[in-house]
Image 1: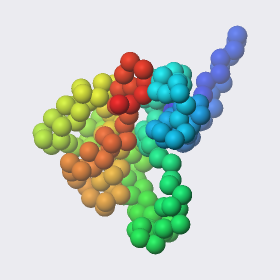
Image 2: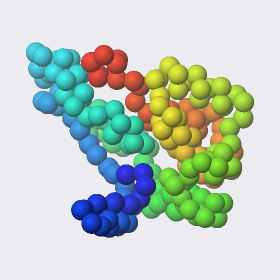
Image 3: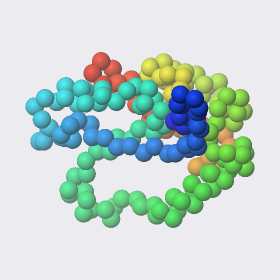
Length: 189
């Protein structure tokens, strides 16, 4: 997933193919999909959810940059959208295009490909941010891969804001997209 290529090895030869892709996945919190809804959740919760979520390997989860929990929508809220702030798709697209252009102008490619020395060059954290990230990484049981992904995401959030500098709120938002160590049974507590 990270190398951007697939290598197929057979008895006498290897073939390499490009494989840059964006993985987008979704899953229910449990087999019935009603975990957290007291009116609908099954009698085996939370154990059934723990077993269900633990079927996904840690290394695979570690390679997914953004983890976003989406709660069920209350039917009463579905019809009452007038009070919610709305940002058009065109506005969001403009901001994303500007952020991608900023990344390409700065380093010649998008942040998702940052690694090694380029990571140190383009993802600059001051001492306060570094200490904050180190403390969070330790508390969350984060791997080195996850640590670097947080830095890339924070860099992207700053780019979406149109800023060259990463600030605390960028780092905090990036951390909010990372799952906390799933613990003994897998369900976040």
